[in-house]
Amino acid sequence: MDLLEAIIKRRDTRHFLNEPIDLNIIKEAIEVANLAPSVGQLKPTRYVIITDVTIKEKIKANFDTVNFLAKKNAANANKVDSYNELKLEGIIEAPIGIVICCDFSVLTEFSIGTISKPKEMLLASTSCAIHTLWLYLTQCELAMGLVSILNYEELAQTLNLEPNWFPMGYFCVGKPATNYNNIPMLSLKNWNTHKESPIVIVK
Image (tube, rainbow, N blue to C red; front, side, top):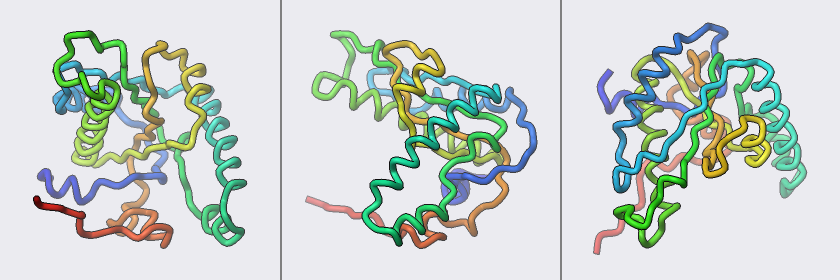
């Protein structure tokens, strides 16, 4: 699979097969993600790999609580019905979870490229690592899905994260049960229109 094919095939996956994954593949993918662009070569990205069912259940309960609040805040009943039809996590089904964090402690007064927006630049670096990881896993015929509907303070407590580690989300990893007809799941469910063309301004 070449790079363009991996980019096209990459999906934000919620449905996984009940099949184990070799942790060595995950560790290899993380090594590849470490090659992603990083401002000032600070490499702020940290990975917490989760296979323990008890921890997964706590994180699933975290999601359920926040997801309930999200539904309560919906503007109208029709939107809630549509929302309820969406599967927004695969925490228990996916054999592996990864909480990917940005470590703000790497910043120093001499960190190149961070003087204007230091934390934002680190978050951008971690985002590059996440995307690189996602593409490499896609190339390995694996899938990844972001769970962002969480109480992040509670997530940090559950995993006993270092104080300066900012969790970017919980990522479910496993073999995909579907490719969603090769389009984003939200588009498939008519939740959000997928814009085919980017907005570009030339000056």
